Figure 1: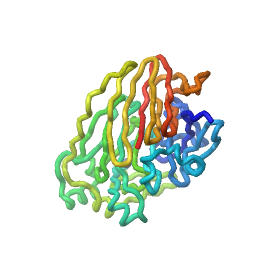
Figure 2: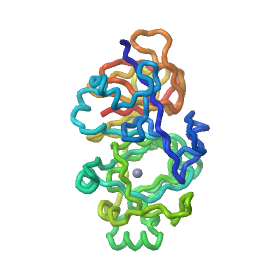
Figure 3: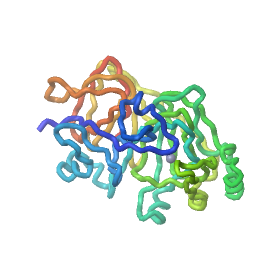
Figure 4: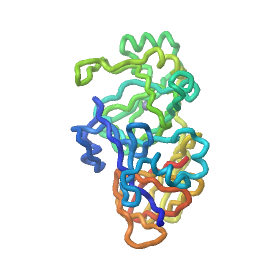
Length: 321
Ligand code: ZN
């Protein structure tokens, strides 16, 4: 059997803040009018991405793993649950001010779930778009609690104007919000635990405010000032540049910009990549005509293979564990 990069079909989500860019600019489809999130690589129960390739049509990662555990590589063996979740997110409106728990807190209070450290690679944004991330200065719990009650909490937070190619690492415990006009690729631990601190007093489509989780949020929020980590410089390779974006216990992420070709080797981990610029084809070891790829596509690459991405120009975000 020829093992190759397997295209993924995401699970899509509609929330009150999503837009239409994932349809119009990223080639996604859904029955809903808007798409807030596409869960590109997901083994999250009930929201799985599936394989869109004739070799394993419609398979979830779970099903693929039963048949081919070797596709996931040596490193995956230490995880009880699939470690990573990758999403495209289109914030047409501001997302709520929120925070996620650490692994320790989630294990104790959320039925043994993972916590949620996440990171954002900005793939598109409107002029003047920004994110809110962490506190400008250290805050006291009482001060934060009062600022949540009177709606002034955003004033305590860093406001970072963004542009495509920016990357932000969001450790568990850091208050944050994606704000309107920002489209990101989010790579996170495989967890869906969000504590909402403030939702701008908005109402959902049924006219009700969304649930807040202020006690839990205050419990897990890091009160210190937040300063983003500087990124290492990009390194040249024969066809382009690679920039390491982050490395955690659960995932590591890099940006690859290439002309002509990028050869992706996987060894002791599977990889997943999402195309953020360009189009071309993926040529496997057998050669021949390849699998086409374009902006917005995501693939699962089994461990221990070599795939060649060919394009005049391409940019992909590669995640491994
Ligand atoms: Zn978040």
